[in-house]
Image (cartoon, rainbow, N blue to C red):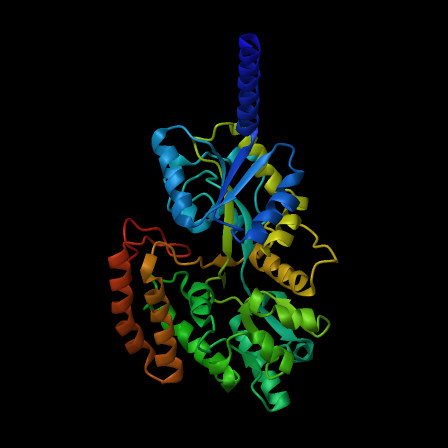
Length: 422
């Protein structure tokens, strides 16, 4: 009996050692992305199952994600093998806590994204992984009215205004649509598109002379914009009803138009201004903490996430678009194919100038957005003088930045401490 018990104990101990070894072999992928149950399951079954090593994919909200990561970094020992997070999450980290991935030979097709991933250093602090964005869409009926010599994939704001004016003259109606309704994402247009395209900044340049020019240009565009735009929030509806022939909105808010009538619409990049083709990418990346238990296994997983096949599988699982050059399969929904092409062209354009999502604002994020909405309403809807409005709103913006202490994000130049409103 004692011999049997002893043998059972040895067997049990061996089993525990084997189990521990297997568990240790799993690469822990600690992510803030693909959190919904369906997306997380699809990541495990359809994306990561093809990797040679076992992967323990664990998505979490930002708070728990950061708490565990910081605990491992402080202890100098950890179990997290790969980090998946938004650019803003990585930019809030100490670069010394991330492994330099410059020698991996993988990265985004967008040099702009690769440069952002350096986080102000001279090395790759993370590798761009996937992206989402806002794009332009048009009814094909509008194409014959494009300005002479204009390339729909490389429009300027002046050409967009001229195009919208041509359509208005031909149809007798203003058919450019803008999401200025109560639930519209108008603030993201100003933060990520107009300001980067005209001022090469958002916070520092908020009240600059270049910002005055930006708002003057937007007033020209508003003059050929469908007046019902103050009630438009999801432009797919107006595209389908043909109240609008040309539109700007988030990819998800244009999807139904492409899925219901894929042959009637085209998707294309946002226009460019004097300081580049401003656009707001939602960039997620993969990185490796310095406390990763198996560096080679972590690097192998990062490389796997950037392979074309994995990028397509990730698109299917998350609706985030690839960051590498890859042909989209024909069996994807029409909206995904259309938007994916436009997003890829926009992010890889030589004049790309991304205006990133605001970071570090905490509970003041809504107040930050309100500054841009109020500025729009005062200048465009109420007709107040641009310079006076910007000087007034500048005070509110500076208060938010100083209270939060949030440092500048691209395209604003980096700051020590709170991003200044110059």
